[in-house]
Image (cartoon, rainbow, N blue to C red; front, side, top):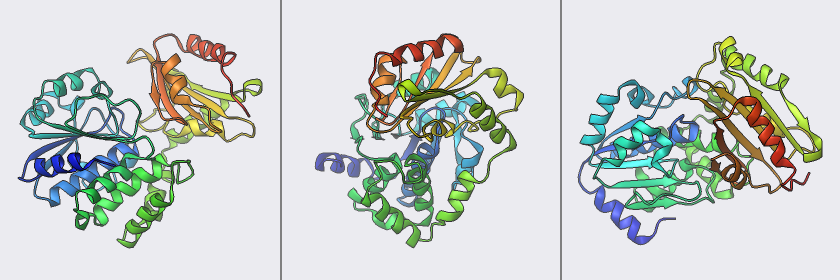
Length: 338
């Protein structure tokens, strides 16, 4: 939770109406978009003029979030978004803790600003750019942290159905539909409050998980077809080449959550999902684990990444084949218990 000093600082920053920029990380997911739009609606009710600026496009399946149509996309309009950032009197960064997570161009624009920053995030090792850093890895989602942020400011009257819809979305996606170990009794009590406010949890779940494009289903099928199992290491992995993605006419968000299928087999405690991105010249990697294996530590040590104990990401500038071979080679030097 925030300290008393942090709460007083935020209250002072929000005393008078301000132009406020709210920033999620690059390739924003449900928690990033839910938290930023939830905060957007909260600040708007307080009389501020907020704007959500994403580094790049967000997935189409999150377009149901209230006011998603107002979101500005930095890569789509660099000059316009840079102007909005320069006009901002306060900046909130949500669901990330180092400015490099917004991409080189947007990070440079953010670093040039002289206004106060407030960080709300649940990842490890936060940077020190913010005047208030609300950082706690025990939370399962940034959306749950935004709920507590509003509560600690003493402004819970602004948590309505619209705010709740946004925050519920991030909680359900980042908790794996409430199955991850960071889901607590408090998490469920918050969700119960949202439902009592009229948040349609069933409809949100359907929009998130029963609303896939044909390309998404074909990409899932190809990923499963490409799956390899290494039982001696209690490990599995999947991969997609750039050609695989292109052949199915993939859209942003089509690969979201596919990595979790690698953990669904008996005896598997560690899985990875490799996606080739020739435009960026990298292999994007998602890691998932269970039974205590720390993929945050693993990703930091081997693939320039990080995240949480059981969910992390990384990247490689080597070829897809070389990256997978490096991954397999590391398994002989780590302990994974099944």
